[in-house]
Amino acid sequence: MVSEHIVASFDRDLEGIQAKVMRMGGLVEVALRDAVQALEEGDLDAADRIRRDDQAIDRLNEEIRSETAQLLALRAPTAIDLRVVLSVMAISASLERIGDYAKNIAKRSHVVAEGARINGSIGALKRMSHFVIAMISDALDAYIQHDTALASDVFERDREADQMYNTLFRALLTHMMEDHRNITAGMHLHFIAKNIERAGDHATTIAEQTIYMVTGETPDDDRPKGDTTPMHGMEAGD
Image 1 (cartoon, rainbow, N blue to C red):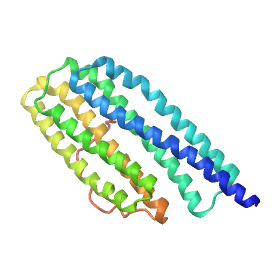
Image 2 (image 1 turned 135 degrees about the vertical axis):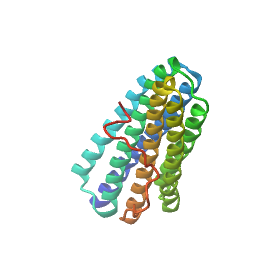
Image 3 (image 1 turned 90 degrees about the vertical axis):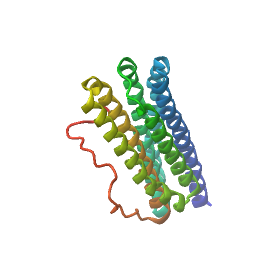
C-alpha cells in the first residue's frame, strides 16, 4: 500500500512538471513566431514585448529545474522513471534556449528596421521560422505521445532546416559583397537566421530526448550536418 502511494505521488508530481513543460513549449512557439512577425512588420513595440515576456519562460524553466531536482531527491526514481525525469530537464533547458533565440531576434529588429532592406531575406526568414516552429511543435507532441516515429521524423528534418539556413546565408553574403551598404543589415539578418537554425537544433534535441526516454537509447548522429557556415568567434545570441 505504501509503495502504491509513493508511485501515485511520483506520477502526480511528474504530471505537474510535464504540464509546465508543455506550457513553456507553447510560450516558446508563440515567441519565435511573433519575433519574426515583428521583424517583418517593423513592429518595435511587439519586439519589446517579446523581450519582456521571455521572463515568463525563464521562470518556468527555473520552476521545472527546482521541481525535478526535488523529485529526484524525494522519490528516487529508477529505470524508465529516471529517464523521464532526465528528459524533462533536458527538454526544459532546450525550450529556454529557444526562448532566448526569440528574444535575440526581437532585439535585432530595432537595428534591421533602421537599415537597408535586402530583397527576399525577410520572406526566407519567415519560411524558415515556420519550418522550425513546426519541428518544435511536433517534437513536443512526440514527447507527450511517446511517439518515437514522429520524434525520428523531427530528427531527420533538421537537415532541411540547415539547408534553408545555408541557402539564406549564401544569398546574404552575395548581397553584402555586391553592395557594402548591405553589410550591417546582412550581418544582423545572418545572426537572426542562425538563431532560427539553432532553435531547430534544439527541436532535434527534444526529439532525441523522446527517443531516449522511450527506448533508453539515443539516435545515431552520424549524418552530416547541413550547416557548414563558419561562425569563428561569433555567437548567435550576441
